[in-house]
Image (cartoon, rainbow, N blue to C red; front, side, top):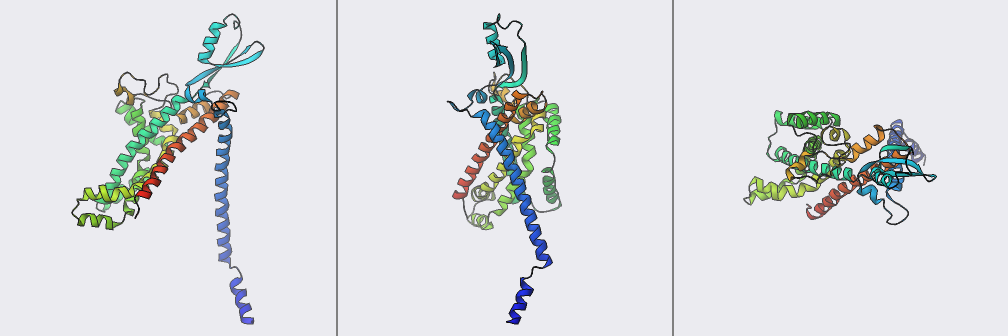
Length: 349
């Protein structure tokens, strides 16, 4: 009995190493909860204030003009004893019909505080889809070369190190690179094409690294069995390796989508306009489509939040745009997630 009690005292008593481990565990746990709490507060703030702009209490329960119209200047004036607010187009028409009554009435104007953000939504979707298409094609092809064809050596190791280092380059550097190369040197101008290439090169390191790991995760037996049956290496990669690596490749695309859609600096230098009257597809010739600039949600938020005087009217535009931006990015990413899950069910080993 005495020996048992002594053993319990020895092994039941926490050692200093155990106490340190417990302390580190709770520190990491509290840090994780703190980060999650901050993220939850940010999303709640944007969701509550932005949702109040998008959703209405009466039919059709959605702020359709905000989602379907272009940004406008807001006009605020007194009329018949009350304050009226109108977008620029509606105000011009109203002023023409009531010119005598509005004569001498002071009108306050607030830039980008009326209308909607439809051109910004369209431009953001086009920028994300175009850049991701270019990045996925180039990234997967590069990953196939590094994983299946390249022989390990000093040059290949240097190449992989360079790819990893490029993943840490700030987005502003990629923006300046795209501006100097595509906008000026190649004379693409501020256009969709310049934005696509800049954003694609920015996320290319992430896609190459993740795609290479996904290809390496496919069992070697698939390759050996295919080659033993007489298939060429290209046929083996196309039919027995790449399909099983697609879920991992799409995982990298989800991460890349979030970065592409949220980077303001590259868009500002290469593709985005503050205001554009025509929508991206309103061109005379289809060849002009890729050589035109667009409006984008991140750049619009940046302009409205920092480049114009802040007032009670810009607040709704800021939160409404941020809400739609988060929803747009989430919808594109969720599409990739659903496709990834379907491919995982289809291709399992």
